[in-house]
Amino acid sequence: MGDDKRERALWAAVLIQAIEDVNWTPKETISQAIKQRHLHEKEKAKAYLKAKRAGIGSFLWICELFDIDPDKVREAIFDNNGRCISAGLEV
Image 1: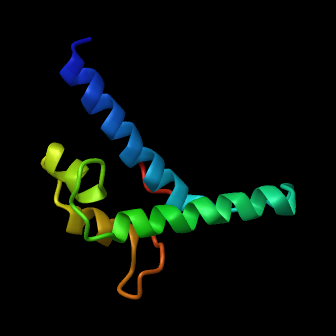
Image 2: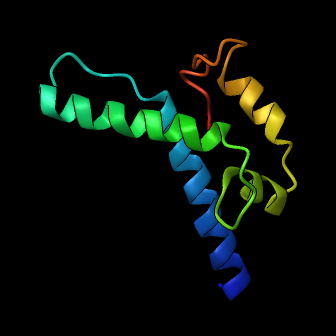
């Protein structure tokens, strides 16, 4: 795999992880500590996906790299009030 393909695979993985994190829902069997850690990661993912920053590694930058409309992605993930609606979104 060439360097360009590896780099694109890395940034695709970053985007997929953010979407997975924002879609995470707690299982009843997990400990409170693990639940809190995952909820913190979920909030960080929400902030990442909603950010207006366009620097290297940002959500907007990755969307540009893959020629993806960031507004369409956000519409698929969040409702008009900013709440996550994409549980079960295929990534």
